[in-house]
Image (tube, rainbow, N blue to C red; front, top):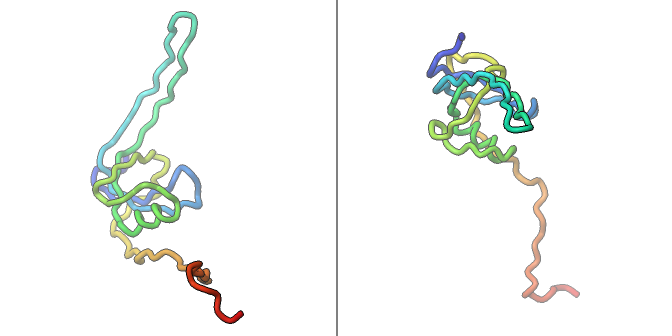
Amino acid sequence: MKYKINDIVLVRSTAGDEIPNIHVKLLERVVVKERKGRQIGMRKTMDWPGYSGWEATPVSQDECDRLRSEWSIPLTKPGEDITFIHDYCIIKRVKKLPEIKKYQPEKRSKRRKVRNFNQKKSGK
């Protein structure tokens, strides 16, 4: 195990490469062993594979804002939200947190004209 508690790491999403990578702080190691299925009467339950990973919390408010507004991922505040990170999702350990640009959503280029239906039409 090359990561320790309180390390800041860069992680990717399991949902796909389009979702941006974010920085998280590792809080607690989680290891779940694999379990065999049991025979219950005439049927057998399924085998569960084991997995390992970390409980983590986001580091940057700007990254949380971007994920929430563009991808509807419900991260609100760094340090309060806890998420699970699989070991294979960790890209690298970060020694110094990079300066992250303040996120500003894109503005609409063309504004739609809204007409007040209570006013009379002018001109014709």
